[in-house]
Image (tube, rainbow, N blue to C red; front, side, top):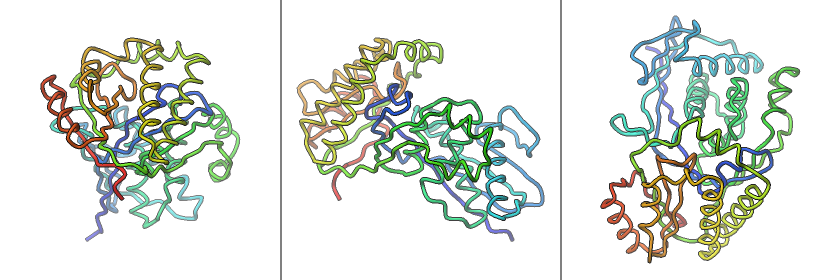
Length: 335
């Protein structure tokens, strides 16, 4: 019987820097969320791809629903050939939705799926890919698809950790991919930064789900169009103070940076904070807790950092009263 391999990828949420990190050279602090997608893979006589998201299976014949998965396989097989490895057909099954019972939390991304397929294929060929190579391979897939996201989600999910991420120029990467072989592109300096952050202070990290979808793609375009130098400068300042505060265990700096990042997002576009996200934030009143929207905004999730375990419980109870569900909680800084 053929060996069956299982792999998984998690999700991510932004603590600070969302929207600004879309501009090359600007940073974000991103938290890994261990709510997982999983995949099984085994050698087969013909390619067979299945996903819980779709009610049917396909092979490598181009298919709209499976395009992201198929293009990731295509890229990985090109890379395998560069390593002198002959690709072989397999049976791949993706499971999970980064939510529960069909609920979509907004912590995942197309990046979660791309990384899952790359990790599955690496497992099949018994290859140990380091997080940086995982990140680069996944970024190539998305950039070739015309995705102009920051790739911060890929960095966080590849490293499975709390990180500082500074974005690179995706237009540059797209251009070099058309003129240079993949193996050479992977060896270039892409001019991004990924730094792991080990908090030197204990706090509870909480994710509150508003049960409402994030803002539409049209509104996201509107928000992106409002990004200016003032917003970028304020965002980078907040992100750098947050990284420093976390590393040095400075509660005041952490709180100040989250508040600055929050204020900056509100100035960009008030629609980022819908009524549910406002309630999520207002529930922290009188507590040593800082909270803000995370990601695109307008719905989905908000995050909170609580420096007092008793007040953490108070916050959870207040959220419950407002129909905000805690979908993830982690004690940070206790090493």
